[in-house]
Image (tube, rainbow, N blue to C red):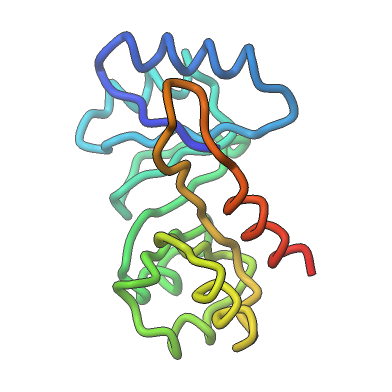
Length: 155
């Protein structure tokens, strides 16, 4: 699960509240890498399991934190030996995605049952990123569709 962190102290308050509330789920911090002070604060204060970043050239991050590069540059996969890549499914060519090493990629889009099933039937074996979607009210959401999408992955 990922949460956006910013220089706004409220984002860190929400992070700590969720970290204390949710057990057994690994948390990744989504940050903008233009601010190295934010990166340092994230590493020290939030102590995330992973960091999702939007740049490929980054300072050294401790080895216990998994790095996720949010990019659509398919060539970056071969340029970086470490890290996992999040590609936006709508913005990259599907035939190229199917050739990538499945243990280092996640695909992100607004998934439907049909779209996900078609991708899986073509042999895709990498990770899938789901977004939470709209809440009926704060903290309340219908997870029926999410359960069905996860069910497709379980088969």
